[in-house]
Amino acid sequence: MIYERNPKPPVRNFLLASRMRSLLSLMHERFLSSSPFSSSSFAVECLVNSCGLPSKSALEFSRDFHLHENNLQSFQSVFHCFQSHNIPSTRITKLIKRRPQILNYSVEDNLKPKLQLLVQNGIVGHHMCKVFVSNPVILNADLDSQIKPCFQFLKSVLGSNRNVVEAINRSSNLLTCDLKGCLQPNIDFLIEEGVPFDGVAEFLIRDAITVQHKHNSMVNAVNDLKNLGFDPKAPVFLEAVRVRIHMSESIWKEKIEVMKSLGWSEGEIFSAFKRDPNFLKSPVEKIRVATDFFVNTLKLGREILSEDPEFFTLKIDKSCRRRYGVFTLLESEKLIEGGVKIEEVLKMRDKEFLVKYVKKYVDKVPGLWETFNGRKQQQSLPRSNRAMGKSSSLREGKL
Image (cartoon, rainbow, N blue to C red; front, side):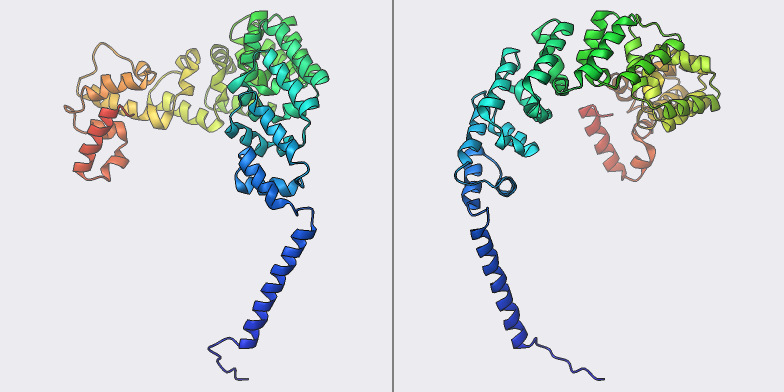
Protein backbone atom coordinates (compact mmCIF):
# COMPACT_ATOMS: atom_id res chain seq x y z
CA MET A 1 0.00 0.00 0.00
CA ILE A 2 1.28 3.45 -0.93
CA TYR A 3 0.69 6.37 1.47
CA GLU A 4 0.51 9.83 0.03
CA ARG A 5 2.47 12.55 1.82
CA ASN A 6 0.32 15.32 3.26
CA PRO A 7 2.52 18.31 4.17
CA LYS A 8 -0.30 20.10 6.08
CA PRO A 9 -2.63 18.69 8.79
CA PRO A 10 -6.29 18.47 7.71
CA VAL A 11 -8.27 21.58 8.57
CA ARG A 12 -11.07 19.49 10.04
CA ASN A 13 -8.68 17.86 12.56
CA PHE A 14 -7.30 21.23 13.58
CA LEU A 15 -10.78 22.65 14.20
CA LEU A 16 -11.80 19.55 16.15
CA ALA A 17 -8.76 19.84 18.44
CA SER A 18 -9.41 23.53 18.98
CA ARG A 19 -13.05 22.89 19.96
CA MET A 20 -11.99 20.10 22.30
CA ARG A 21 -9.58 22.43 24.11
CA SER A 22 -12.33 25.04 24.48
CA LEU A 23 -14.75 22.43 25.80
CA LEU A 24 -12.25 21.16 28.37
CA SER A 25 -11.52 24.71 29.49
CA LEU A 26 -15.24 25.42 29.91
CA MET A 27 -15.73 22.19 31.89
CA HIS A 28 -12.78 23.10 34.14
CA GLU A 29 -14.27 26.56 34.87
CA ARG A 30 -17.69 25.11 35.65
CA PHE A 31 -16.14 22.50 37.91
CA LEU A 32 -14.32 25.15 39.91
CA SER A 33 -17.41 27.32 40.21
CA SER A 34 -19.49 24.42 41.53
CA SER A 35 -16.81 22.77 43.70
CA PRO A 36 -15.77 23.48 47.30
CA PHE A 37 -12.99 25.58 45.79
CA SER A 38 -15.34 28.33 44.61
CA SER A 39 -13.63 30.77 46.95
CA SER A 40 -10.19 29.52 46.01
CA SER A 41 -8.94 32.76 44.48
CA PHE A 42 -10.12 34.76 47.48
CA ALA A 43 -8.51 32.29 49.86
CA VAL A 44 -5.22 32.34 47.98
CA GLU A 45 -5.18 36.12 47.93
CA CYS A 46 -5.89 36.28 51.64
CA LEU A 47 -3.22 33.71 52.54
CA VAL A 48 -0.68 35.56 50.44
CA ASN A 49 -1.52 39.05 51.67
CA SER A 50 -2.44 38.36 55.30
CA CYS A 51 -0.30 35.34 56.11
CA GLY A 52 2.67 35.96 53.85
CA LEU A 53 2.56 32.55 52.18
CA PRO A 54 4.02 32.05 48.71
CA SER A 55 1.25 31.90 46.11
CA LYS A 56 1.99 28.26 45.26
CA SER A 57 1.79 27.20 48.92
CA ALA A 58 -1.34 29.28 49.44
CA LEU A 59 -3.03 27.56 46.49
CA GLU A 60 -2.14 24.13 47.89
CA PHE A 61 -3.46 25.04 51.33
CA SER A 62 -6.69 26.47 49.92
CA ARG A 63 -7.37 23.19 48.11
CA ASP A 64 -6.24 20.80 50.82
CA PHE A 65 -8.14 22.51 53.61
CA HIS A 66 -11.16 23.79 51.64
CA LEU A 67 -10.61 27.40 52.61
CA HIS A 68 -13.64 29.63 52.20
CA GLU A 69 -14.44 33.21 53.05
CA ASN A 70 -16.34 32.12 56.16
CA ASN A 71 -13.34 30.45 57.83
CA LEU A 72 -10.44 32.55 56.60
CA GLN A 73 -10.77 34.75 59.66
CA SER A 74 -9.83 31.84 61.91
CA PHE A 75 -6.77 31.12 59.77
CA GLN A 76 -5.73 34.73 60.04
CA SER A 77 -6.15 34.58 63.82
CA VAL A 78 -3.71 31.64 63.94
CA PHE A 79 -1.18 33.67 62.00
CA HIS A 80 -1.68 36.77 64.17
CA CYS A 81 -1.43 34.69 67.34
CA PHE A 82 2.13 33.72 66.41
CA GLN A 83 2.91 37.28 65.34
CA SER A 84 1.79 38.58 68.74
CA HIS A 85 4.64 36.56 70.28
CA ASN A 86 7.21 38.31 68.07
CA ILE A 87 7.66 35.38 65.71
CA PRO A 88 8.66 36.74 62.27
CA SER A 89 6.31 36.14 59.34
CA THR A 90 8.98 34.18 57.49
CA ARG A 91 9.21 31.74 60.38
CA ILE A 92 5.44 31.43 60.65
CA THR A 93 5.27 30.70 56.93
CA LYS A 94 7.94 28.02 57.30
CA LEU A 95 6.05 26.52 60.22
CA ILE A 96 2.75 26.42 58.31
CA LYS A 97 4.48 24.86 55.29
CA ARG A 98 5.85 22.11 57.52
CA ARG A 99 2.56 21.50 59.30
CA PRO A 100 -0.35 23.15 57.47
CA GLN A 101 -2.86 21.54 59.87
CA ILE A 102 -1.94 24.38 62.22
CA LEU A 103 -4.33 26.57 60.25
CA ASN A 104 -7.19 24.51 61.67
CA TYR A 105 -6.06 24.71 65.31
CA SER A 106 -8.09 26.60 67.87
CA VAL A 107 -6.26 29.70 69.03
CA GLU A 108 -7.98 29.92 72.41
CA ASP A 109 -8.05 26.22 73.31
CA ASN A 110 -4.80 25.04 71.74
CA LEU A 111 -2.27 27.65 70.73
CA LYS A 112 -2.50 30.33 73.41
CA PRO A 113 -2.11 27.99 76.43
CA LYS A 114 0.98 26.37 74.88
CA LEU A 115 2.54 29.67 73.89
CA GLN A 116 1.93 31.01 77.39
CA LEU A 117 3.57 27.95 78.95
CA LEU A 118 6.65 28.41 76.79
CA VAL A 119 6.85 32.09 77.68
CA GLN A 120 6.50 31.32 81.39
CA ASN A 121 9.47 28.95 81.12
CA GLY A 122 11.67 31.42 79.28
CA ILE A 123 11.22 30.17 75.73
CA VAL A 124 10.49 33.37 73.82
CA GLY A 125 11.37 35.13 70.57
CA HIS A 126 13.83 33.28 68.35
CA HIS A 127 13.92 30.38 70.84
CA MET A 128 10.20 29.89 70.36
CA CYS A 129 10.65 30.06 66.58
CA LYS A 130 13.31 27.39 66.67
CA VAL A 131 11.24 25.08 68.87
CA PHE A 132 8.14 25.23 66.69
CA VAL A 133 9.90 25.05 63.33
CA SER A 134 12.11 22.13 64.38
CA ASN A 135 9.27 20.24 66.08
CA PRO A 136 5.79 21.43 65.04
CA VAL A 137 4.36 18.26 66.63
CA ILE A 138 4.41 20.23 69.89
CA LEU A 139 1.36 22.15 68.70
CA ASN A 140 -0.57 18.90 68.40
CA ALA A 141 0.60 17.43 71.72
CA ASP A 142 -1.63 17.47 74.77
CA LEU A 143 -0.68 20.24 77.16
CA ASP A 144 -1.57 18.54 80.46
CA SER A 145 -0.61 14.93 79.75
CA GLN A 146 2.51 15.53 77.61
CA ILE A 147 4.08 18.99 77.58
CA LYS A 148 3.69 20.02 81.23
CA PRO A 149 5.00 16.70 82.65
CA CYS A 150 8.03 16.94 80.34
CA PHE A 151 8.75 20.48 81.53
CA GLN A 152 8.43 19.42 85.16
CA PHE A 153 10.74 16.43 84.72
CA LEU A 154 13.36 18.46 82.84
CA LYS A 155 13.29 21.09 85.57
CA SER A 156 13.77 18.42 88.26
CA VAL A 157 16.89 17.12 86.51
CA LEU A 158 18.38 20.32 85.11
CA GLY A 159 17.56 22.58 88.02
CA SER A 160 16.90 25.88 86.28
CA ASN A 161 14.77 27.32 83.50
CA ARG A 162 17.94 28.44 81.77
CA ASN A 163 19.18 24.85 81.51
CA VAL A 164 15.75 23.64 80.42
CA VAL A 165 15.67 26.27 77.66
CA GLU A 166 19.14 25.24 76.50
CA ALA A 167 18.17 21.57 76.41
CA ILE A 168 14.96 22.25 74.47
CA ASN A 169 16.78 24.55 72.07
CA ARG A 170 19.18 21.73 71.29
CA SER A 171 16.45 19.07 71.08
CA SER A 172 12.88 20.35 70.95
CA ASN A 173 11.52 16.79 70.83
CA LEU A 174 12.19 16.62 74.57
CA LEU A 175 8.70 18.09 74.92
CA THR A 176 7.10 15.35 72.83
CA CYS A 177 9.25 12.37 73.83
CA ASP A 178 8.15 9.17 75.52
CA LEU A 179 8.67 10.45 79.03
CA LYS A 180 7.46 7.42 81.02
CA GLY A 181 8.74 4.77 78.62
CA CYS A 182 12.21 6.10 77.74
CA LEU A 183 13.48 9.42 79.05
CA GLN A 184 12.71 9.09 82.76
CA PRO A 185 13.66 5.38 83.06
CA ASN A 186 16.96 6.05 81.26
CA ILE A 187 17.86 8.98 83.48
CA ASP A 188 16.97 7.02 86.62
CA PHE A 189 18.93 3.99 85.40
CA LEU A 190 22.11 5.98 84.69
CA ILE A 191 22.01 7.52 88.14
CA GLU A 192 21.37 4.14 89.77
CA GLU A 193 24.39 2.72 87.91
CA GLY A 194 26.63 5.33 89.52
CA VAL A 195 26.87 8.03 86.86
CA PRO A 196 27.21 11.38 88.71
CA PHE A 197 24.00 13.41 88.73
CA ASP A 198 25.71 16.49 87.28
CA GLY A 199 27.12 14.37 84.47
CA VAL A 200 23.68 13.01 83.64
CA ALA A 201 22.22 16.54 83.59
CA GLU A 202 24.96 17.77 81.28
CA PHE A 203 24.49 14.72 79.06
CA LEU A 204 20.76 15.42 78.83
CA ILE A 205 21.47 18.96 77.61
CA ARG A 206 24.23 17.97 75.22
CA ASP A 207 22.87 14.72 73.80
CA ALA A 208 19.14 14.36 74.44
CA ILE A 209 18.71 12.01 71.48
CA THR A 210 20.83 9.34 73.16
CA VAL A 211 18.94 9.63 76.44
CA GLN A 212 15.64 9.14 74.59
CA HIS A 213 16.59 5.72 73.21
CA LYS A 214 14.50 2.71 74.12
CA HIS A 215 15.16 1.70 77.69
CA ASN A 216 16.33 -1.82 76.84
CA SER A 217 18.90 -0.35 74.42
CA MET A 218 20.24 1.84 77.22
CA VAL A 219 20.43 -1.09 79.62
CA ASN A 220 22.25 -3.26 77.06
CA ALA A 221 24.75 -0.50 76.19
CA VAL A 222 25.58 0.20 79.84
CA ASN A 223 25.98 -3.51 80.64
CA ASP A 224 28.25 -4.04 77.62
CA LEU A 225 30.48 -1.17 78.70
CA LYS A 226 30.65 -2.37 82.29
CA ASN A 227 31.70 -5.81 81.01
CA LEU A 228 34.54 -4.11 79.14
CA GLY A 229 35.73 -2.58 82.37
CA PHE A 230 34.26 0.92 82.08
CA ASP A 231 33.63 2.79 85.30
CA PRO A 232 30.26 4.61 85.22
CA LYS A 233 31.80 7.35 87.36
CA ALA A 234 34.48 8.10 84.75
CA PRO A 235 33.90 11.20 82.56
CA VAL A 236 34.38 9.13 79.39
CA PHE A 237 31.61 6.67 80.30
CA LEU A 238 28.67 8.64 78.89
CA GLU A 239 30.59 9.30 75.68
CA ALA A 240 31.07 5.56 75.35
CA VAL A 241 27.34 5.07 75.98
CA ARG A 242 26.56 7.47 73.16
CA VAL A 243 28.83 5.63 70.70
CA ARG A 244 27.68 2.17 71.73
CA ILE A 245 23.94 2.85 71.80
CA HIS A 246 23.95 4.29 68.27
CA MET A 247 25.74 1.23 66.85
CA SER A 248 23.91 -1.98 66.06
CA GLU A 249 25.26 -5.25 67.43
CA SER A 250 26.21 -6.44 63.94
CA ILE A 251 28.18 -3.28 63.11
CA TRP A 252 29.89 -3.37 66.50
CA LYS A 253 31.03 -6.96 65.98
CA GLU A 254 32.09 -6.25 62.39
CA LYS A 255 34.38 -3.42 63.45
CA ILE A 256 35.97 -5.52 66.18
CA GLU A 257 36.59 -8.39 63.72
CA VAL A 258 38.04 -6.05 61.09
CA MET A 259 40.50 -4.61 63.58
CA LYS A 260 41.49 -8.10 64.67
CA SER A 261 42.12 -9.02 61.03
CA LEU A 262 44.45 -6.00 60.84
CA GLY A 263 46.53 -7.35 63.70
CA TRP A 264 44.86 -5.67 66.67
CA SER A 265 44.25 -7.65 69.83
CA GLU A 266 41.02 -7.21 71.79
CA GLY A 267 43.09 -5.64 74.55
CA GLU A 268 44.47 -2.99 72.18
CA ILE A 269 41.05 -2.31 70.66
CA PHE A 270 39.26 -1.80 73.95
CA SER A 271 42.18 0.08 75.46
CA ALA A 272 41.84 2.59 72.62
CA PHE A 273 38.07 2.64 73.00
CA LYS A 274 38.37 3.50 76.70
CA ARG A 275 40.66 6.40 75.91
CA ASP A 276 38.53 7.82 73.10
CA PRO A 277 35.24 6.03 72.32
CA ASN A 278 34.75 8.11 69.19
CA PHE A 279 37.44 6.24 67.29
CA LEU A 280 35.05 3.30 66.80
CA LYS A 281 32.52 5.64 65.19
CA SER A 282 34.71 5.54 62.08
CA PRO A 283 33.33 3.46 59.18
CA VAL A 284 34.93 0.08 58.61
CA GLU A 285 36.71 1.25 55.45
CA LYS A 286 38.11 4.28 57.29
CA ILE A 287 39.51 1.93 59.95
CA ARG A 288 41.19 -0.17 57.24
CA VAL A 289 42.67 2.83 55.43
CA ALA A 290 43.82 4.54 58.62
CA THR A 291 45.47 1.41 60.01
CA ASP A 292 47.26 0.79 56.70
CA PHE A 293 48.51 4.38 56.50
CA PHE A 294 49.68 4.72 60.09
CA VAL A 295 51.16 1.25 60.48
CA ASN A 296 52.54 0.49 57.00
CA THR A 297 53.36 3.98 55.66
CA LEU A 298 54.25 5.92 58.80
CA LYS A 299 55.55 2.82 60.62
CA LEU A 300 53.72 3.72 63.80
CA GLY A 301 53.21 0.77 66.10
CA ARG A 302 49.69 -0.24 67.02
CA GLU A 303 50.54 0.50 70.63
CA ILE A 304 50.91 4.17 69.68
CA LEU A 305 47.50 4.15 68.01
CA SER A 306 46.00 2.34 70.96
CA GLU A 307 47.37 4.96 73.35
CA ASP A 308 46.24 7.82 71.13
CA PRO A 309 43.14 6.79 69.10
CA GLU A 310 42.62 10.40 68.03
CA PHE A 311 44.57 9.39 64.91
CA PHE A 312 41.48 7.57 63.65
CA THR A 313 39.49 10.80 63.61
CA LEU A 314 41.93 12.52 61.24
CA LYS A 315 41.27 12.92 57.51
CA ILE A 316 43.65 10.51 55.85
CA ASP A 317 43.49 11.54 52.18
CA LYS A 318 42.61 15.22 52.54
CA SER A 319 45.12 16.00 55.27
CA CYS A 320 47.41 13.27 56.58
CA ARG A 321 48.90 12.08 53.27
CA ARG A 322 49.60 15.64 52.15
CA ARG A 323 51.17 16.64 55.43
CA TYR A 324 53.27 13.50 55.38
CA GLY A 325 54.45 14.41 51.87
CA VAL A 326 55.41 17.92 52.97
CA PHE A 327 57.14 16.58 56.08
CA THR A 328 59.25 14.02 54.20
CA LEU A 329 60.17 16.59 51.53
CA LEU A 330 61.34 19.09 54.15
CA GLU A 331 63.12 16.29 56.00
CA SER A 332 65.02 15.36 52.84
CA GLU A 333 66.15 18.98 52.61
CA LYS A 334 67.23 18.81 56.28
CA LEU A 335 64.78 21.56 57.21
CA ILE A 336 62.99 19.67 60.01
CA GLU A 337 64.65 20.72 63.25
CA GLY A 338 64.31 19.84 66.91
CA GLY A 339 63.39 16.18 66.58
CA VAL A 340 59.81 16.90 65.52
CA LYS A 341 57.75 13.73 65.13
CA ILE A 342 55.31 13.13 62.29
CA GLU A 343 52.58 12.30 64.84
CA GLU A 344 52.76 15.87 66.14
CA VAL A 345 52.63 17.32 62.65
CA LEU A 346 49.54 15.33 61.68
CA LYS A 347 47.56 16.65 64.65
CA MET A 348 48.48 20.32 64.27
CA ARG A 349 45.84 22.91 63.60
CA ASP A 350 45.53 23.75 59.91
CA LYS A 351 46.74 27.34 60.22
CA GLU A 352 49.69 26.35 62.38
CA PHE A 353 50.80 23.74 59.87
CA LEU A 354 50.38 26.15 56.96
CA VAL A 355 52.52 28.82 58.61
CA LYS A 356 55.18 26.55 60.07
CA TYR A 357 55.76 24.11 57.23
CA VAL A 358 54.39 25.62 54.02
CA LYS A 359 54.61 29.42 54.00
CA LYS A 360 58.01 29.35 55.63
CA TYR A 361 59.60 27.18 52.93
CA VAL A 362 57.42 27.47 49.85
CA ASP A 363 59.86 29.78 48.03
CA LYS A 364 62.90 27.72 49.01
CA VAL A 365 61.83 24.15 48.26
CA PRO A 366 60.78 23.27 44.69
CA GLY A 367 57.60 21.24 44.53
CA LEU A 368 56.57 21.96 48.12
CA TRP A 369 53.36 23.71 47.15
CA GLU A 370 52.43 20.98 44.69
CA THR A 371 53.04 18.35 47.36
CA PHE A 372 50.94 20.23 49.88
CA ASN A 373 48.13 20.89 47.44
CA GLY A 374 48.07 17.53 45.65
CA ARG A 375 50.45 16.75 42.78
CA LYS A 376 47.90 15.47 40.23
CA GLN A 377 45.71 18.51 40.61
CA GLN A 378 48.57 20.97 40.24
CA GLN A 379 50.47 19.27 37.40
CA SER A 380 47.51 19.77 35.07
CA LEU A 381 47.78 23.56 35.44
CA PRO A 382 50.11 25.81 33.44
CA ARG A 383 53.12 27.10 35.40
CA SER A 384 51.75 30.65 35.57
CA ASN A 385 48.40 29.44 36.88
CA ARG A 386 50.10 27.36 39.57
CA ALA A 387 52.02 30.39 40.75
CA MET A 388 48.90 32.55 40.83
CA GLY A 389 46.97 29.89 42.68
CA LYS A 390 49.81 29.46 45.18
CA SER A 391 50.07 33.14 46.07
CA SER A 392 46.30 33.57 46.26
CA SER A 393 45.79 30.55 48.51
CA LEU A 394 48.64 31.55 50.77
CA ARG A 395 47.12 34.97 51.25
CA GLU A 396 43.78 33.41 52.11
CA GLY A 397 45.35 30.81 54.38
CA LYS A 398 43.68 27.90 52.58
CA LEU A 399 44.63 24.28 53.21
